[in-house]
Amino acid sequence: MPVTRAHAVADELRRRILVGELPPGTRLRQLDVARELGVSTTPVREAFTSLAREGLIQQDAHRGVFVFAPSEDDVRERYEIRIALEPLAAGLAAKSISDEALAELDALMADMKRAVTRDKGRYAGELDPRFHVLIAEGAERPRLAELIAGLQDGSGPVSKELHAQHVEIVEALRARAPKRASRAMKAHLEHALTQI
Image (cartoon, rainbow, N blue to C red):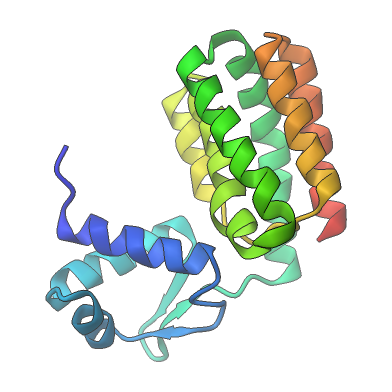
């Protein structure tokens, strides 16, 4: 499936936001982004609209476009929703996740193990969100996966303890243990919320 320029711009801006290159509160100017990425302003405008729907940026008619700076209440609400949805996805994934998806999770876990101490920005901004999205996709419920993907903001805490919880989740998925996977995911998200 061909990627439009708007999708390519959105992907690049999303990556920069999630890895912290564009921290919360950063102002994004349409013309500057267009020049930097070598596109016209139309795909940039479309990318802004897409990223605003995802909650990564805020558009204000008077102030412009800014990388979303979540309040404590925003973060709490996002985690409360995730705690409701992601254990369901993990339980479903334990029943249906493919061997290929498990292999992709294994490769991702190896990257995460290296990054947990060496590159926490990449861990939180790129690897952890990908971990959660892969599991949601493994549930084979497209709407559920889309909702969960929209809740990933790359602002979660990073620790060896939280990484160990990721390992527990993958072990439950590999064992095809839905209840165990669901419980492990819920405990993981609740612990992450207390860390935040």
